[in-house]
Length: 92
Length: 425
Image 1 (cartoon, chains in turn cyan, brown):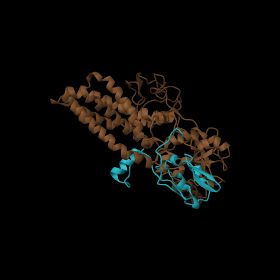
Image 2 (cartoon, rainbow over the protein chains, first blue to last red):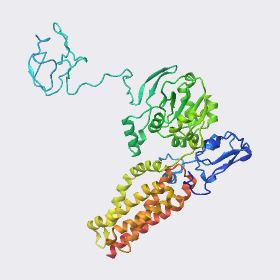
Image 3 (tube, chains in turn yellow, red):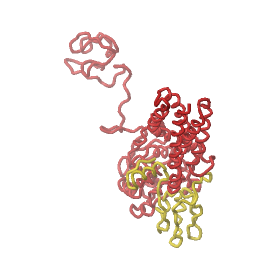
Image 4 (cartoon, helix red, strand yellow):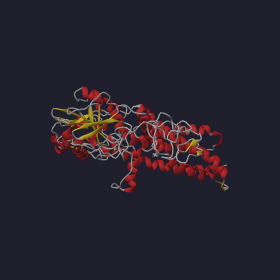
């Protein structure tokens, strides 16, 4: 996926390093290799590779990862602008 | 021969022949079809004595009506159910009868999967959730979990040739693994529910289920373990790696863990993008022809047709540039924002359009057409973000806030220039 880079510095991904227990689950589930675990701590090694799918945060047993997950889909976002965030929106 | 065997015709030669009715002994014209049930067709060669009700029987050698009858109903058919083409047979297990599915696709499966790529029946392309199997699985066989989108299910079973395994299909409302996980349909709760419903703990001795890695967006592995007793093993992203994954002792290497977006993967997505444009295009064409008819004579149909045709061509070029060229050429088009990539392909398309029509365009009309093609292409390329496996919602929202005002502005300027150009002539 090195050929496919999206906008820089936009992701909402945050890692709380002191809370990390180094289990490696984030490294395992991330489809873009954003994390690497070394010395019992996870590290964000490719921040701009993050697509905010939320797999890491969902599977972190220590709740050390925060990200606002969502679908990176323009027609979905247009519909949430029109109908509001909580409306049932058809997408993709 | 008398009536119970006196037939002047060979038994059941009803294909367009004159037939003798067994009931009243008169000749009837029959035009190539079977008589009513019970009235004729004593197809049995058995001799009968006395007055007998005569029913058609199945074990006839000769053809009664038209083409030969189809095969007998199979052993797995049940009243009120339809046996699906991909079910081989059923396997008796401690938790009941489990359908064994084919590990190859039939033509009907291919047709269904091609159709959904074109947006046909896309919302109803589902299989029933529950337990299935391939090969001859036993109490030690692996359990693979998948979505009930028919295409996800087909892709998985096709890659399982030679395996003995259980497949647990979740109810993801006919949505694929990754999208269903994003919508919280391929979720922790759904897995726990289906594991219990399928009575998996009575079926297998181990306590492991293999999930596609992309389901991690909706499934917390540690919660599944806590709530169902089954440990989640994160399998490969693509079903085609499943055999290698199992041979490696349920270990996925890095290539199995990363999404890709190859040329073919991008091309496959084009038809569904195009099929979604049919309805808006009808409206767009109506507006195009109305606006193009406006001129110094207020409105002329000849203007609507000849000038409208040029705008329709610019519109079509915008669709090709934004929904075909931009997705397919994605990694080679400069810029990161999709709206910008689409604007670039659209600009090229727009210039091509004015070259075609340059004899009929003045200095107002030419930029109008370029702007139309560019704006449409930019918008469609931006919409393609939803089909890619790498755009973040924060990024998409950021580019949309900048791009949509520009796209709308381009269309407004184009309409002003286009209507203005009609008054220049």
